[in-house]
Length: 292
Image (cartoon, rainbow, N blue to C red; front, side, top):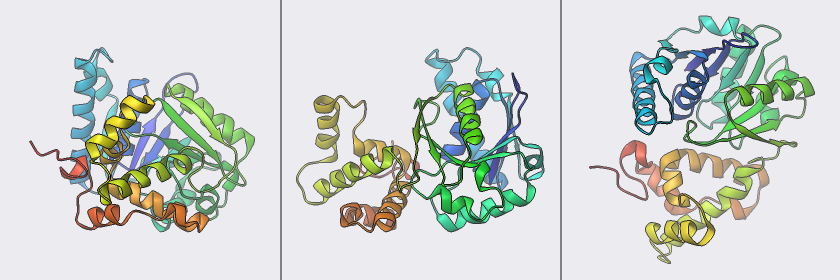
């Protein structure tokens, strides 16, 4: 599945984002709010309908909170398709599919076949090796990590990750795109698992899961402690409920495998919750219940 963002503005770029889920929809919304025309491409009509509803609901909330003035203008920038055709004209492509290395490599092989030679290609991976993903293409110097944070329309950070062969020109192009999208940026200079943020954040999240499993405290107590004790706006368990417990587990597994270090071993409770289908807000139940 994929999203194509046709960029209008100073450089008249066309930007394509592959993946119409939570992250891809968020990237599309941010692009549309920046005045960029967006075409969301996914594999099924049902997926497109879900993406459209997610974006429409989010834009409506932004209008009600006076964060944007004209929701209709934003939504008019976004169109939907099940075809890959527009990707061949894109100047920038951002992949935003689930954190599964084989899936990302498969998609990057397809991108490499279709994308024009001077296209900048980015992966939204939060933990996986940008270098490994780039290795299946004929242009690793044009490939970079652009790790957005969820929910994309609300979180200001963009973590840019250099692969082993990423060129300085590609890095500067990625920064320009991030600036256009209104993001504040940090750069991970080396392509280690988890990069900067998730390498630090995920062990803390994992330990919070262990604390719940061992009965040390409830999710509410743990999250409130982070809010009142450390100044976080949201606790770690509610945060991963929003992002998806399956996504959190995939990221921890990537760290565990990448570093071969037991400190990254995913909490058994987290694994059981994912096996049971309690993935957080998107399924109505995670560490909290969202069924009204």
